[in-house]
Length: 462
Image (cartoon, one colour):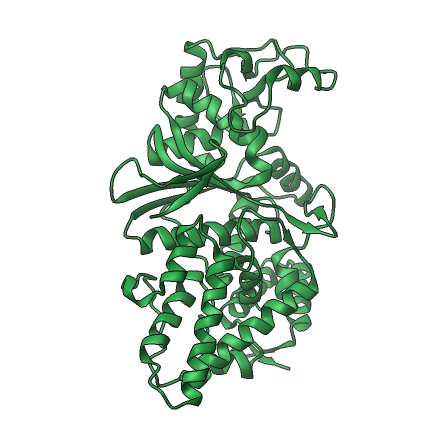
């Protein structure tokens, strides 16, 4: 029986989906103006494991993860780079897929883009205006009237009076209340804009997720997830918008993963203490990062360091060594990531059913590896244990590479290297030599040497 810690109720609850046998899950994705960092990786890996386990339990999962492809940061970055916003966002979405695919994350059922859902957002805002939850300010912007929604603060546990008392002096005099937030922002000259009843503009960030989740999952659905940093105000605002507009229950279970910390301080771009995935991949195989992430329960803080990554790599090496010893004994992986439950040990099932406790599940996996090695030493049959080992590895998304390539190539991810080489070739065609050189240097840092020739670019491990 699967139990989930529901942030809305602040306790573990038995998972009972809205429709038996089906599960709808929405996870807040990335704003595509820059490359992904380790904080993004944690969200993607955490909910990838949850996705795999829900499928393993037999649920038909509709997994939706969005791209925010219109935003102030995107507009600013595109202007600075001298490209159209659509060119920037398309390139960043491609880079996102390369980086996250390298982590062995399954693609969601749907990956909606904000710019493809303008009608749904405008419709939701119209409903809010009609129901007196929103108003058109003197500036022309459409704002959500927070005090109109009595349940505001239910997710974060914040008191609305305390929030207002602690707010800074509000510069925007067009707001009726300092806590009111933007639903539709009037466009400035040169900015991307869409036609709406209130004039040309673009949506606020919060309305995007409310509209896209409801568009793909309905007014009420099972799971909404994201990082702890989104609980307030983003997720709080999502609830206020969707419930006020639709009258539905919106998400029934809220899941939030913990922060990634460096030196006991949250990793974030605003603090300047973040690492892009491409920087990490320059030193470690992507599966090492995934191993590091699943080694901690998703709600706990994750302390990022070279020592922690080295420990994760050492653990992976031990698991791959078990695979090497078992070659020819039935070790396998299944792309569908669905196994006969009888292959899994009761302890592994119990760990995953206890709020997706990957740390405990990983401990079970290592216990199984030790048992396999002892049995091999004793000349005993290991077929059943090996099948269980393979199933657990696949459900955690680790030990998924060829064992010889792992050891002989130092865990080189050939697909990721080929993707970077293709990106470099395109950059050279576009005369973006700075980016081409940066890719060459990035690969060189991994010990990968590029050789350009008449038949294209070849690579080798130095």
